[in-house]
Image (tube, rainbow, N blue to C red; front, side, top):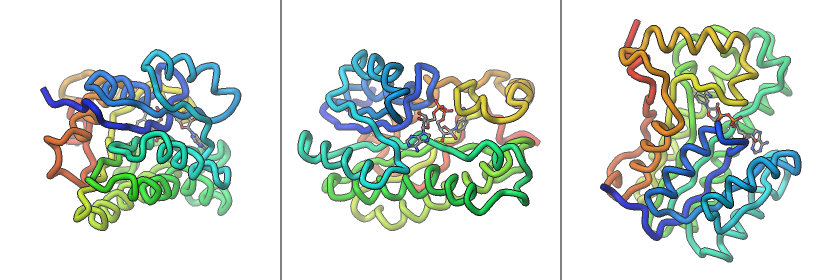
Length: 254
Ligand code: NAD
């Protein structure tokens, strides 16, 4: 089995023990990686800090990517404590409720910009800050959804946002490949998380996924974690720029 022993990994996006980022953090830790973990704000801290402690996270800090300087502060801490980073996990997304629940054509300019900033540009900012900490190469992962390339009812503005995220992954992978920095999107099927509860009729999406997927199983955060751990491993050194479906085969069905 591949090992992440001695690797340093930053995981952004744990809100609770149902978060995809929690599944990823656990898998990276299980394979031996040392972790840095962040939480959104003071309200999130009591939910996330115990999880960070459970995994023996060496660095645990607040991070709201919309706050100027906040992302830089996390990377400064990583630079001074570890001097390097091997894996970056960006598992965050946001769109204002009114825009998320409305038609794409009605999305406000402010809501569009905010959704793109938190869900896409923050990943690019993190990759840029990670680059000097990855002189021997590394792996940068974000989390997308099938609604990027197909119209999924009620996914609304997050569809174009995830399309931009996947495209950003490909461009970043092309730009950083020579430096050995690999960039991927993980694309799980629907999972009952807090972010997902903001999407209208999410239960219908879960039911359709179970019905249509060849495995008739929903993806789990453990499935996503296993894929992330593999992509972070040296054995995956020649994989980059991918959007990896973890969906029981849902995306191959018509
Ligand atoms: P979640 O609610 O557990 O995680 C979302 C995270 O985003 C939270 O930790 C939240 O604090 C963070 N976040 C939001 N705004 C932020 C900001 N300004 N700064 C820093 N962090 C911020 O839900 P999740 O489902 O685990 O979501 C993680 C990722 O997975 C998202 O990108 C989501 O779009 C994606 N995804 C989810 C599903 C699903 O069905 N749940 C499927 C495919 C992809």
